[in-house]
Length: 339
Image 1: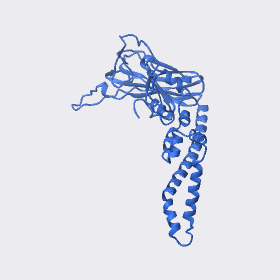
Image 2 (image 1 turned 135 degrees about the vertical axis):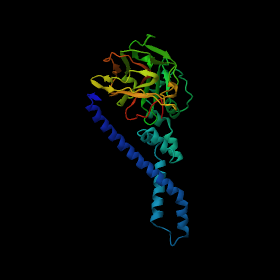
Image 3 (image 1 turned 120 degrees about the vertical axis):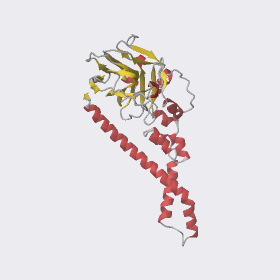
Image 4 (image 1 turned 60 degrees about the vertical axis):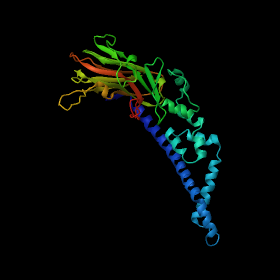
């Protein structure tokens, strides 16, 4: 896949990964220290017993180190609440959950609204107001974060939004109704009906056509800033599918001066039954991805995504379209269709 104007994206991504790695290493060192002091406190009564029954005053390297670590751990727990919460806010949601296992004091800090507000999207209040059911039963920012990790319909119900639980990045799924499909309103070429496994009330199934063109768009300001995203067409093929694999389809993603483009082949996925014949129920198959391209969010610009196969004059049909999913590129498994 060819990418134009992508050098700045790669440089920024490498620098960002370096900063995140350094922050995480510092935090992991701190967590290791906390775990070490926890173990020392667990065995501290035993070392105190050695002091009483040992020769002389019982001083020794093990006891000396234990006293120091126990004292330092007590000092760490005396850190200002806001200071420690500020440190945790520079980590990730996963790191905050892990750190809560160190001690009850650290847990209260790791679960605070101050920490989890930093993990929530910058526009989380606007996101909540756009939900089809904006009333969420949550009493803390952590509970709100966990609720938003589940895909939820927004606006008119033709879009899904959720946040990735490992990073808090925003993900979108645009339904087929939100896309521009050539002759999509003509029942001669496309049919609209409920499909099992779809996230929406209806999906689009291609009856027959020679000009296949699907377009979608989204404003990058609706996504997490300074993030590398990928766009994926969510599709599957009916048992009667034909003509889709004769020629490759052109895919592209454009934003500003950046353009990602390439070609993909839509393979007809069929299963052989016990009698040797190819047969499949569409409802039993999972949706699969057709990668359209990637882009980097840095300002409020329109992102244009498309799939086209218009060079062949042959008929094609049987493609079932659920929508376009936009998710962070480095989190490819963070899909609304599975873990």
